Length: 316
Ligand code: GLU
Image (cartoon, rainbow, N blue to C red; front, side, top):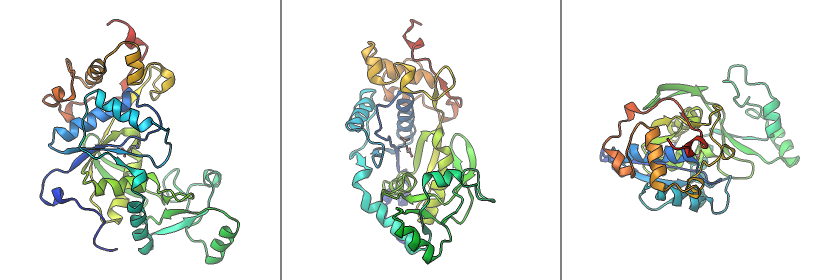
């Protein structure tokens, strides 16, 4: 592999902490759980002297205007970030350069499988559950030509050299999880999430990734990919999600779950911030900076936050 990754992390070289970040996908308004994760990412970063960056992950699932609303809501509860806001859709050249490096290192292959074919295929005999079974891993040139002639759009996959990889999580400890031949570039040419996130985190000098624990299973893949690209692996902290009273992930249908929903019911952004802080075990907070002194990662709740959005409306 070439030895000069397309990234610059001068602060890291100087031994200073790098940056934390929040990276929402603009598919709709953030709900209280997303806002809580954003608050935690801010607290982790600011309490350790890190910069805090905002990245809009708009490579897919974009709802027009959603990113602007998300940023406005995060600002309304008092979060700030270091400019500029980064939009993934403006960074395609960076992703392409990383993909080219992996192609040059013969670490990729074209995959012509449809989603349905992958679902129907049996998991690879020695691979992790749900892993891509490697159908297209060893196609001959003739087979590739045939598939192209059928007009099948090819995704590009990583030729992974491992089936598992271990990462260290600040809250959860060591986590060993599956690595498969993950997609790097989708059939429509869009860089895949796992590739973009790895490239961006390194390029932005992010050495601390705080996000919802639904992303924990993707983390060994991302850390492995970072090492293949000779990029530093950040510190991770995966935080619990918010669940509705039935124990499912909080969703729109659960009631007044966004900041705008809460404000329509007469709650101020400060009150919503206070509610998020209470869910973390802190009382009397009206601003994120008011929480900084009290913030102790080790004492954070490790269980999901159980929230009844309708119950919130009853006087306590
Ligand atoms: N964009 C992803 C999401 O909103 C988060 C990615 C990340 O934090 O690494 O679920």
